[in-house]
Amino acid sequence: MRKLAILGSTGSIGTQALDVAARHSDRFAVTALVAHSSSEKLFEQVRQFHPQIAALSVEPKEIPADIRESCQWMFGENVLLDVVRACDADDVLVSVVGVVGLAAVMEALACGKRVLLANKEPLVAGGELVTEAARKAGHPLLPVDSEHSAIFQCLQGSPEKGRVRRLILTASGGPFVDYTDEQLRAVTPQMAIKHPVWAMGTKVSIDSATMMNKGLEVIEAMNLFNLPQSKIDVIIHRESVIHSFVEFVDKSVIACMSMPNMRLPVQLAMTYPDRIESYAESLDLAKLGSLHFEYPDYKKFKCLSLCIDAAKLGESACVA
Ligand code: MG
Image (cartoon, rainbow, N blue to C red; front, side, top):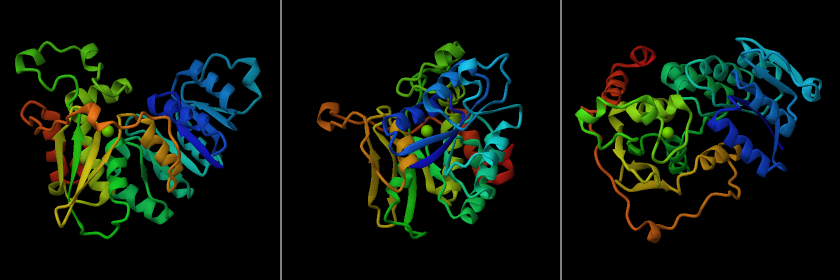
């Protein structure tokens, strides 16, 4: 049994992790659940998973009587750190949104816990601080982001540094990849949150529509895999069947493929170094028929260019 704490349990990744935990209840004990303000959703999760600690950064008016005594409750701005310190989890899934996750990641590593990282900003802003803390903790940082999970998987069996020629991050391109400048001017937030392939939280959906998300992922990959920006390419791949590639020095390329389903990278991080059955749909390449690739338009997606410029400049620019 692995004891799991989830920071951001009511979000898209958090709920999918709980779904994996529920389907494999012989393997996972959920010891702590933390949400920002979605109290009703958290109450439901407490009823189903019986954690030892439940926490909300925004204190609710009332806790329902049936679960009031069932666990320890924590509230307030510092719940992420409070819960990381107080819980006895082996693994901490950090699936909160934004740079707020950085301190929690550092604390979890300092406590010797394994970090399953779905939150991009800790690596974007924390860079070497985070990777160094993970080294000291003696655990690999386990990426939950589909692209980084893919690269992590492609690199299994090739641990030696210097054998990677480049990483190729795939991007679906988001809902506006074919829009002209004229059409882009009329785009609304509602249009931006309708992603063609992935169902995600609002912030990540908007970042995905502007390709800021892919830019953050380039910086994340640099830090996670200790490579310069010049060794990381981005390619548009609308079907999102190949989750990323690694090209090695001999120019052999390994790709990680599956039908798009976030539960796979979530589950692999939860079970690593094991692989177990999943409920994902099996890949049928003949049925798909073809896969497509194209270069991103760096002029149109200025946020992507901005991130790459920041990555070239170095860590302070990434923090900014
Ligand atoms: Mg991603």
